[in-house]
Image (tube, rainbow, N blue to C red; front, side, top):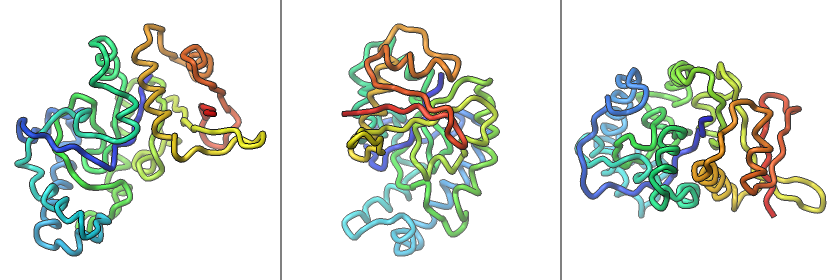
Length: 256
């Protein structure tokens, strides 16, 4: 089973480490597209800072993030699991796991990235600022830029069951319904007067908890869609599988 995660908006820059080496990333056939996008983003931020700030949604107090993007090729890199920060990654708690659990994360997690397409937890990357909905003048929509190549890349997973936890803009980079393998979307819900409604505040936290629980468990992970709800119920979650959704099956995790 593969957990397909969103990145975090916030990044923690590495204080030391090697410079970016594109062929150390998962799916090395994406190298040319990664480098072209990195070069385009760095050039935009260095030559048209006002345009770049608008494109990236940066306020006056965030202009230092333009420098983060201009330094992509010279900044120190660290494993993606150290660069990405935020609620989901805090709850996943990679650094506090034992060696076996970290190994499970390393082999079962892929992280969607607007800049790199997809990265694995141990892939060394620099900090950056770019979201899935950004439109770079030289590039255009990132959906158009990445979709075909990312869908082709994910076919290399050889039919493994994918648990898609991405948010909307990142789901569009490689639409789950177009993947040629079993994919289940994850929705975090809460019961409000007998009606299940989407959770906002605890959505990312719960998804991080799901991945952590699965990777800490010694139980065999599901290989079929129909096994998912029972698997996560055994891990302590209130889980139900909705097979009647119009596009993809949905794993519903109900919080209090």
